[in-house]
Image (cartoon, rainbow, N blue to C red; front, side):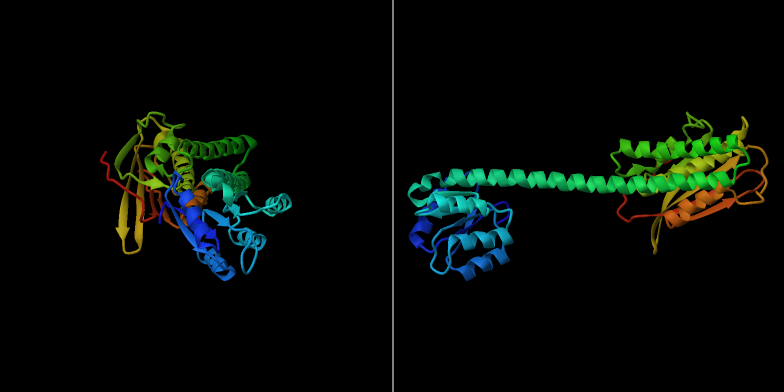
Length: 340
């Protein structure tokens, strides 16, 4: 029955039912008619099945067409309801339209039934499409509102926490602008992909672009093709920004000789799949273990461990900073190994 027009016919006369079905043969669509003749059978049909259109006599042995219309409006409000009756006065027709009937066809003029059914179905489908568009719009508005609230919360947190770690207004402005710009870059990348999944490589390239436009100072090793959902992409983008900002000020990008090796691979265990990322700096100034955990370090750990349920290990050997990051990814993600 898939793809077939479903018609419920409420008619107590077998002869009239056969005439009605004969007229319906001229419809352009394949159809199936379920005929009922009593109130109980009609109610059972409405409860047990769905119909594209309902055809009903006006005068029936155990109840009338108006009662049938009320039941249809309650149980199948989107199905067009057409009276097919021997006699339907003007007052009755007006009352029927007021209560939700779509059309009426007199039995002496059954030839116009196919046109009435076709018109009713087209109008119903147009209304259904409008409802779908409205529902989609409402969904998008709610999603946009949710994302705006989340982003404002992130921005407020960045402002508050950046301010705590800065010693001057100039330092605060510089760090805050960099972090807000990183957030904006991640959003731009997601917007370009229509807020669908985004490749990890693209997130990395977009995050480091302001610091190293041609990636000449990066040695990219194995990098499996990994697609990230919007939430993960935003968090990873913020992490990359912190890593490259730190490297530009204190690490491998703070001089002309330093380089950064980066690689990531998908790892599958009994607990599921994750992407393991390594960031290794070398050739830069000698580094020292920081005395206090700065906001950048806390931001990295917060995004990886709390937002994404992963792990972030940061190391400070004299020859160069190292970061090892492990982030869980859904089993459905398609991945492909890419060599340097």
